[in-house]
Each structure stands twice: as C-alpha cells, then as structure tokens.
Length: 269
Image (cartoon, rainbow, N blue to C red; front, side, top):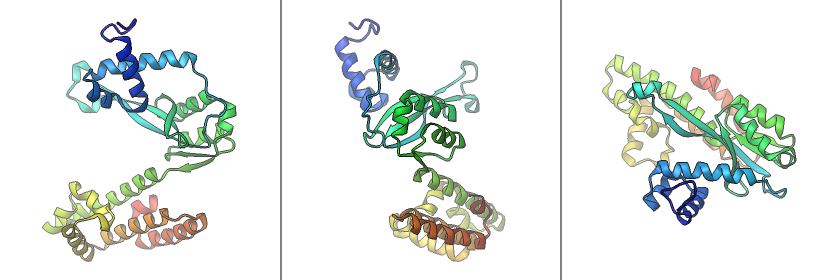
C-alpha cells in the first residue's frame, strides 16, 4: 500500500498521478473508477512532493507563452448550501508554454499577483527568454507581464477579445428584446430571447438554413441588431488578418463604423 495514501497501492498512485499530469482529475476518474476527491488528494500530494525537488531546466522552451485563470473548485457553506450567491469560487492562474502545449507552473488566485508568482517561479533568466506572452484583458496580468518579462511582447488573446465583443453585442440584444416585448412583437421577441443569443453571433456559414432565414428577416426589421451583427462579422474578419498593418487599417475603419452606428456598448468596447 502507498505510504501516505492508504487506500491506494503505490503502483496505482503512480499511474493515476502520471495521467493527471496529462489530463484532468475528472478524466482520470472515468478511466480508473477512483473517486475524484481521492484523485484530487493524490494530485495535490504529488505536486507538493515533486515541487520540493523540481528545478526548471535552463533550455525550457518558453519563447511563446500564455497566462489565464481557470476555475479550480467551488466551496459551499454548510449552513447555506442552497444559496448559490454565497458559494465561494476558487481559481488558479496557469502559465502555459505554447512550445510544449503544457502548463508549466501555476499559482492560487486570478490577480496580477498570481501571475507574478508564476513568473517568479520561472526566475529572471527564463522570463527574459519569453518573446510573446498572451493574456486576458486584466490590467494586473498585463502589468505583471511587462514587469517580469522585459523582452516579451504582451498580447491580448483572441478568445478574450471575442468574449468582450460578444458581451457588447448582447447588450444590444437585451435592449432590443425589451423593446420587442413592449411592442408585443412576437417574432422579434422569440428570436432575441436569451436562449437564442449564440445563434445571433454565430458565423452565418455555420447556421442551419432555417436559422439563416430567421436572421435575414430580423435584420430587415431591426436596424440596431443589423448594425451590431455587421460590426461583429467585420471584427472577426479583421482578427483573421495575418499582417499587422492590414489589421490596423481594418481596425481604424471598424472604429469609424462603430461611431456611425452609435451603439453605446460597442463604443465602450
């Protein structure tokens, strides 16, 4: 039996532990039938043990890196377990090497201090080897990256830009949905309802013919929705550009179109 995890054999703990280095605890639970909590304790124990003896190699491939927070667990107070607003969500910040396609270090939380901890674990020499570092739009992440990675170009990754753009579109949808309810416009109310919001921002080529037909009708009826959809479509085309100058030229034109459309949420974005 394992010295510290009495319900497991040493062989099982080593096998499951190595699997969890490559995938999630939930995936290993499905493969082994072992409870997720037991696997979680094993993973935590192994990480602490390995970290005591671990040193990053000087030739670690780290020229391209990214940082982002992920949800680790949710703590539910015993006395108010049904009140979801009181549940405490715990996050960790991961630092990923694109060269290896792996998480190379992490830290508790999702603040600038969390990323600073990740980069401190790498040390100054490896931080100087980072040429590009992609982060979300959190100011603390950007400040930590600029402070610890003097040679890195700090970029906002496409996912978070698109996520913020979709939020701007959803503000327009909400406003038009409320207007449709007041006007008792059943067609617009049905297609603008919250459950349909992803259809509205999906690229048209990926939609069914029925949904494409509904969207075309909506765009003819609602100028604000039509403008918002055009802005989203054009912005994604700009993000597809491969050359910086083409991107900047397209972005300047897009900004002019936003001002002309007069949609507050897009102006804020």
